[in-house]
Image (cartoon, rainbow, N blue to C red; front, top):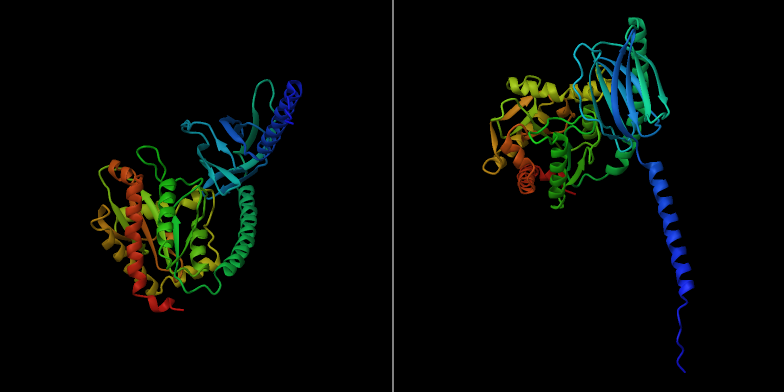
Length: 418
């Protein structure tokens, strides 16, 4: 006997409705969770001058936790928020105002920073938020006291430095412990640290098409890392793998604390003369090889100020690092690798006429670590920018760097034998 099941149309309809309702409930719960964790959006910014104070108004799409502080040298206001999206178009501020300009970027995976340049030292007056009303968005208000006495400013600066030093000391201790665990007893393979310049709130140079240096060099660093790792002969670490800010001090501490065998800092410059193009390689020297090298080093060394971090009071540990730089061996090793690198570039990578340069780059000051800074080319030159954005050229560039690395460590293989 054959049994035929006749579908109940009414029951099927009810079942479909139940399934649809369940899916909608699930989607709404997912969206609710996503909304809870999604970062805020900054949708507008305004500046107003009043007797005795200046007001900054940030329009947001919701209430946010925030930290506001004033730095004195150079004068600037710092606003830290949960990782946010910046939507306002850049605007040119009228001259003569206290506020000269502002920048936005990401410090790390969870924090965004707004840096406001001030025309003179000031004190923080107050900060508060206003809930949405009459069609207006949520607003974060920051007021700057323009009539504060010098004694109050100095006291405020001292408190900020104490908080920063305490925070850095705690973080550095944690980093040191993690680094020792990761790299203890692993000296069989040379450790190469690749340092993509800039990042986050510090975008670096801007290309003719609008692309930022921080994105170009990060892409190149990731390609180079894979190229080097594929040989199986080296360990590779990037100072940053995302669009986050990293201080110059932190970059050299990473290389120094891990006892890196080679440190490669990657950049892409921009210059007023649009016809200038080609790669160049820098090594450390307190006396620059030429005026352009001096200007470039000065600009790169100000990256920490751009992000709102004041490193004017150098710690004792960093002072010791700088003293150790007098070691002739490290300097000679850096020069040796730089010359190999230029040789590998020749015929494969367009080179600047003066392609071997030296200047006082802070990022090259990791004690005992051979270090070079590679300027891949000029984003201000149309042809250089086109090449730097080309996947084929990026692979060619990585291949040339790898060849120099192979030559360099082939002469030092006895140091890394088991």
